[in-house]
Image (tube, rainbow, N blue to C red; front, top):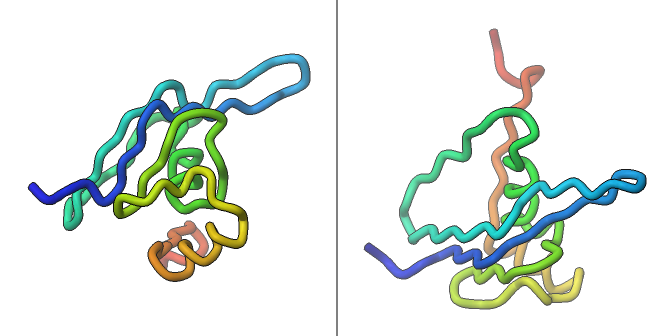
Length: 101
């Protein structure tokens, strides 16, 4: 197996909802090798979109580290994250209204 392309360690993402905290991701560890296919599945509210937003550098974790191609991208500035996103990350969106019936 190839070296990890994506490495998440101890990722936490907490949202404040009024006086309550909603833990979308708790202590998530994930390693994805180059060329590996991954499916993210789970019930509504299980953190799938939160995870994808973090992987795409569209959101930041409250705790933990994210290494992309061996580089810690967790603490990059918004400008640096935008540069990495435009050069190293691709998005494929699928919405019901875009998929022919």
